[in-house]
Length: 193
Image (cartoon, rainbow, N blue to C red; front, side, top):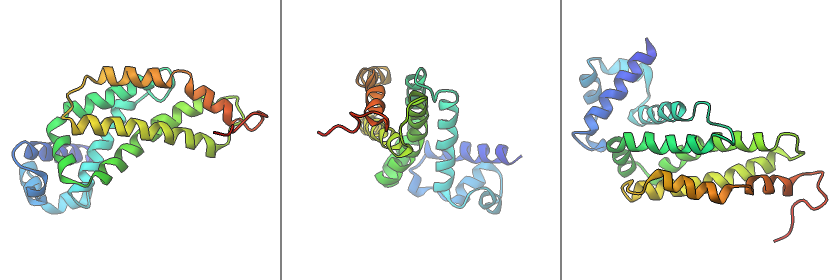
């Protein structure tokens, strides 16, 4: 029953965002639109931003399900773009209503899990420290989040397929080269710049 109520609250918030900006929506508005009382809202979420984060995480989890592999990361990222575009009124309202830092933090969490899964897969059988694998995942995370933020800022005009194709071209083989360079059993590891 909890997931049903959370989904209903999410639907109410998205419905209200079609009519007015986020900073004009109250918990009472959401509860009334959903047909519940305010205390029921607080049973599930601490505030509206908690509901927004939950909604984004749920949408992203669906988009990324089964896509945390090297062979499927492009599809996972493409589905993130599509999920964002499908929820454009919601995303644009959130993007313009909360600090850029909050949006970045959310996107960093989301993409890091996907990228770390890809790095782990590519590092199988290699002697690479967890710290170095995290560093590589972070590098790609910052690149992807920057691309997505620019895409959102530019009103989602560019075709996500083009963005993913360009990113794929840059990444092709480079992750493996990076892992090889960070192997602890490689005498040439960690080359100087």
